[in-house]
Image 1 (cartoon, rainbow, N blue to C red):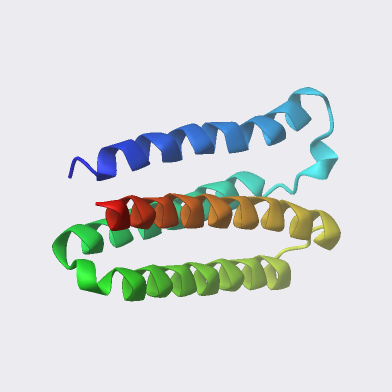
Image 2 (image 1 turned 90 degrees about the vertical axis):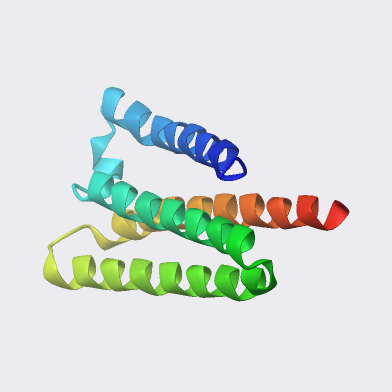
Length: 129
């Protein structure tokens, strides 16, 4: 459990940093660069990222031989869930699609990059021992 706590702290710091850009857009009057569904998207993708990180780290502690499979499975699940969520929003709501796509990819790729960085860094530290 002690391996998970530092990763959770870094996730929450990352989430705060990720939210500063959109918050600055709101306070500077550039809300038209954000879709109305931005914050639910932010919460959904953030929750999926947190779940994937915790799942893979728990698997690494309990069954280290399945680390790679858990990492791949969590990443594929997150990708499919995010794309399903995006498809649902695009088809069911009237939104500015280019702005929505920019918002989605801002959230998705930065969260994916953070997830891959944390989990691969954790694997590298394990292999050095």
